Image 1 (tube, rainbow, N blue to C red):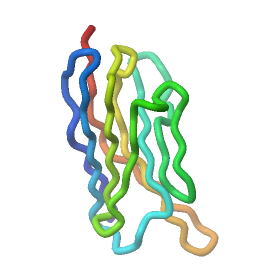
Image 2 (cartoon, one colour):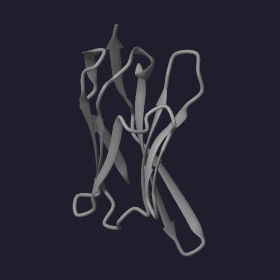
Image 3 (cartoon, rainbow, N blue to C red):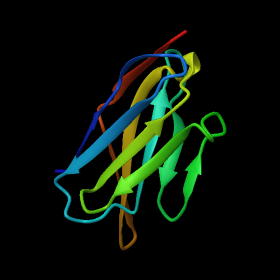
Image 4 (cartoon, rainbow, N blue to C red):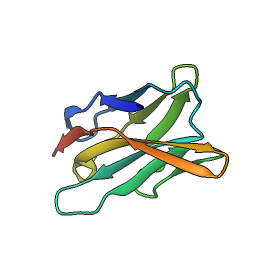
Length: 117
């Protein structure tokens, strides 16, 4: 049973920084891709950043957020700088594992990030 556990969320003032962490357990295989999503109240979940064959960021976070991975630990991190109130959301860790022709996707439980103005 693969589990993803996020940590590092909290309350921060605009302009501040936070670092989110996501640790995986239960998988001895390296994930093909790991990503961060977020969901603000009343909005759909949106992709923030991915790390797989390539690294990609949502336009809204480019230049401010950095995704990184520790493959030995099957972990992914999100360094968030210059935070804005509109970054307030629940942030979710996502991991993708491809075995032959099957794709397995896993989600964490989410961690709240609140940016005050």
